[in-house]
Amino acid sequence: MNDRILGVIFDLDGTVLNTLDDLADACNQTMRHFSAPEHTVDEVRRMVGGGVGKLIRRALPADTPDVEYERALSWFREYYASHAEIKTAPYPDVPEMLSAIRAAGVHVACNSNKFDSAVRALCEKYLAPNIELAMGEREGVPRKPAPDAVFAILKHFGVQKSRTLYVGDSDVDLQTAQNAGIDCAWVSWGFRRENELGDCTIPHAMHTADQLRNFILE
Image (cartoon, rainbow, N blue to C red; front, top):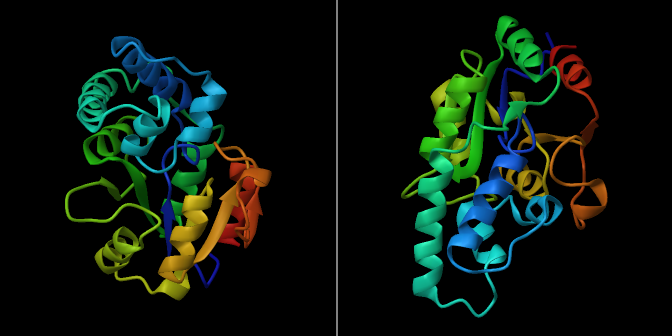
């Protein structure tokens, strides 16, 4: 096992699970319900990453009143909670990669800006038993790129920053790792293309789950 990595913190959407179609469907159901314009899957892909609040804010017309936004967000949360497992699936070879690194004794956690109940439900359905700790958006914990959830995970596992790797697909993930002071691997198969990461630096680029597994274990 790599003598440097004892813990890995994964983003959820676009990193270990392809949730895009279910997110897009739920978003457009919400837009339809509130008589707002719908969006293509690729448009939704570029809206996600900052939590469902930002997704719905970006999806609604710019002049939507706050009270209507709150109603739409609540409607989306309720709809998505019961429609989050229709088209969602792990990315190729991800379950096997998670199993291999857990078998090697590496701690594995998930840190997402998706609301906490959905994060835990999706991890339980698709990634159990290889995700030891799943943390989503919750009261009192700032969303990524704030490092608070990362610090909570490190404390839970008792792993030093220098022995931890953060894995994600977006600029938010790269910024989260930087803010936490830990190493980061960006995965190219997710929701953000390399040219959509702004001026973020990519410490390690991973193009397959096997490449990521080898990086962690070797």
